[in-house]
Amino acid sequence: MISFENVTKRYGTRIALDEVSFALDAGEMAFLVGHSGAGKSTLLRHLVCLEAPSEGRVMVGNFDLRRLSASQLPMFRRKVGVVFQDPQLLPDRTVYENVALPLKAAGFDRKVIPGRVNAALEQVELSHVVDALPGELSSGQRQRVGIARAVVHKPALLLADEPTGNLDPELSKKIMKLFTQFRNHGVTVLIATHEQALVEAQPFRVLRLDQGRLVESG
Image (cartoon, rainbow, N blue to C red; front, side):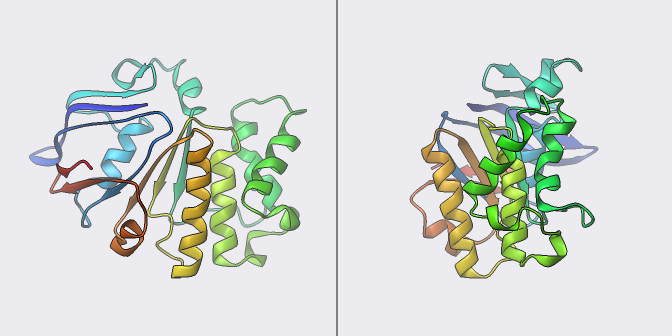
């Protein structure tokens, strides 16, 4: 599902990624770890075409991300869901409307949107707050709305950048259980985190970056 082949990313004289190579199979779940500035976010940005490698190749499924045309990019992004530490929900939109946004932006048939949204909210156990505004929710609920928004279009690949950074340990466990459930349904999951205790509590593969170099690949 994911393949990095000798990927180097330079910003002027600074090297953010240094000849990184690894592969994740479809349906595999892994953690991407490393200190602040190690290159985790840069690596994730390559997977959603927000960055392009200075050298090397990034593959996601059958897509060679170096060669994606402007017309192919929307089709590719339908296959990827992204969860952030701050879900950045629109405060004046209901939970339903926030989760429906990516479907509307991608041009999904209006008739299928309610079913997709309700199914995504059911997955994260938030069907009962469908009409609530983000300000009426707890931090854990807001993060689960962000996850529902990321998976509402049924992506093959789910990326998460520090998804439990603002949550207490008990809520973090619940979020990790959700990611594991998605993986059990065939979704490839890559989670960037600095929380060592969270990683050690899980049986999944670890990819460790240090100053842009991949020093552990599980």
